[in-house]
Amino acid sequence: MKRIEAIIPSNRLNLIVAAIEEMGVSGITTIESKGRGKAARPSLRSSRGTSTQIAEYNSLITIITIVEDSRVDQIIGTILNVASTGSSGDGKIFISSVDDIIDIQTKKKDIV
Image (cartoon, rainbow, N blue to C red):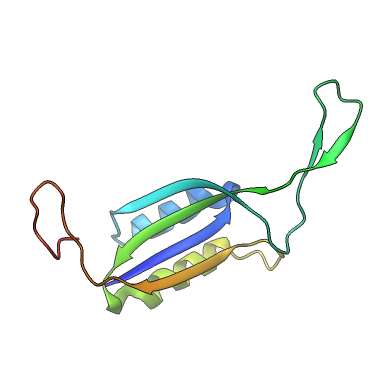
């Protein structure tokens, strides 16, 4: 099993989740996150609108799902097709191995 974690701009969330769900993936977790990388950070106006400052972080979404090894390339390809605009700040995808999965309710291992 593999854990796929995609950090994307928040405006791409619905498109990516819909595309992943169309592939039959039902277990998806999303987390509002903040970060900064190469992408430009947005300008923020003061409450009175008289001054601006650069945000310290970009608003991002982290999408996490666990899939069988044989499906990783398909899921990654789908995320790339939907998320990539060719611009800096499109996001990152991290893939890691999952050694065990334990369902808390049933206390059984290896349930996805």
